[in-house]
Amino acid sequence: MPIYKLEPIDLDDRDWEASTHKGSVTLRAKDPTAAISLAKVSFGIAAARKFPQEILANPWNKHMVSCAEIFDSEYPIEGNEEILEPEG
Image 1: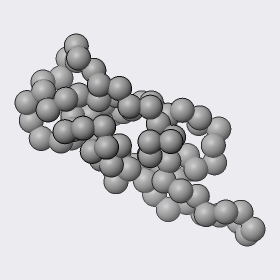
Image 2 (image 1 turned 180 degrees about the vertical axis):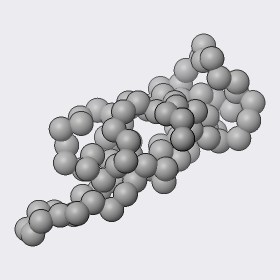
Image 3 (image 1 turned 60 degrees about the vertical axis):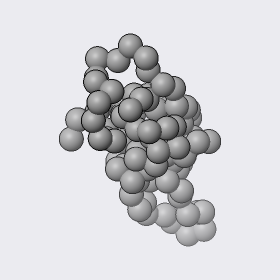
Image 4 (image 1 turned 45 degrees about the vertical axis):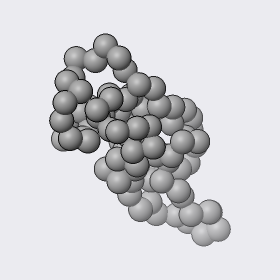
């Protein structure tokens, strides 16, 4: 399975308040869509808002992160879909 690296595009966007992690992510997934979905379910949280602010969206989506396949990764391509970095 390929290894991908996701990078936030604009950490100044308020939607990043709806994430427990705001840095790069390395993971193993079947394709870029699955990679972003895995980050979305792993790091997305409900964030408080003050009226009349808009509801924050989970920032782990194709508009808020770049996704690149890593071909010379230290991680094996064999294995299940999983987040490799950050640990935990």
